[in-house]
Image (tube, rainbow, N blue to C red; front, side, top):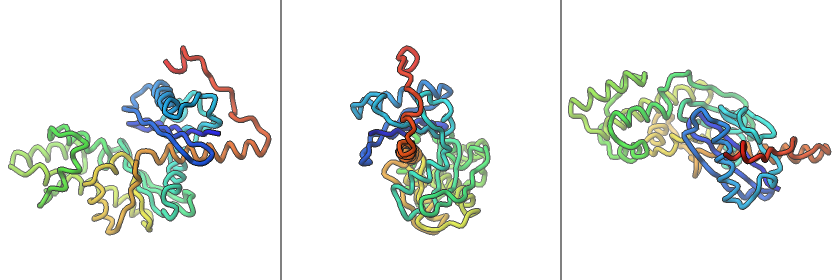
Length: 280
């Protein structure tokens, strides 16, 4: 039997397909954009091709993330907080605090024995998110994926006083005109973002093990800045983008088992296989 979790995030769409033994394939596509249904179809098609499966081979599908209501082949929708906690716990059984920095939000989760017990999220401001770094990278004329390595070359980080993305952008331009080094400016930006997220996390009682996830967790400079601001070690998954989809797939497996035990049909509804509308 096979199970799938689809995570329609604010910037990227992810899918994880697992079998009964926990073996998996995954796929990531983006940017998510406004056409959630189309991208959900595309990412499922990619994962099925990698696994050499047909849609009918998937016993149960759980959708999560911002666009979870727009996954046409899902049997169940579950919030990203619940799925994220389940996915992180599967990778790090001793996790007590999970911090996720995504493209448009940051959230901190309190986890106990694999269960979500509390959480806090940032406001709608882009500061403290991947969007903050994306805007500044464009201002500096560098690739977003290069920011981490560049910042690690810093010897004297430049403090960034503005949390607002627009004002921080103007501050960066000012520092450049003063002849400050790019690596020092980026290190200062990373510290500003990390301090904001750390302050959010400290609204909960941060307890180890602490796990950092989300696309921003791929930035080595952010990881180091988060360690400094939290005053402790961080664990980072091999692919920090997939924890939500992984949790959704694991919950799909559990829900399928529960349905079978009750004698209920699995999948819950017949799959819609009209390719003219499904995989276009």
